[in-house]
Length: 128
Image 1 (tube, rainbow, N blue to C red):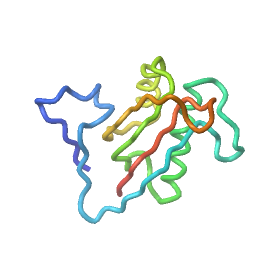
Image 2: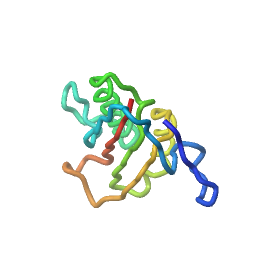
Image 3: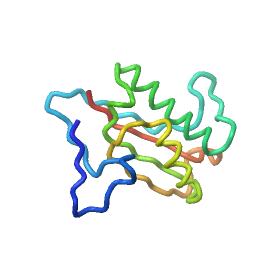
Image 4: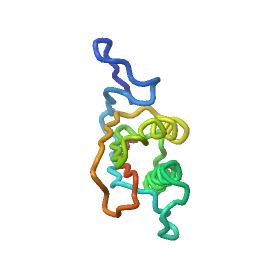
């Protein structure tokens, strides 16, 4: 993948995202539906607030990627939906810890998700 961060645009936050990602011709593409902080094995919401839900949502993305023979390194685009503005700083930290790639990223604040206790939903596009 080739990352694009043109000089006239504000720099990407410490390389945790790219302004653009170019996928080579012939790459397989996987679209991952929005994943939330619910453990896919037992159906329970991760305990521990935003950090735990965010980490679980990323783990769920990782599980979908693995089912297609892909990994987090193959992620080229992420869209993150948050229900609380105050979680933005922690989102950056959890992403830096758990999502060690620099995909194109969109973050959206929303009034709510499908279940009122869900704080974050993450969808992804991967190419390999």
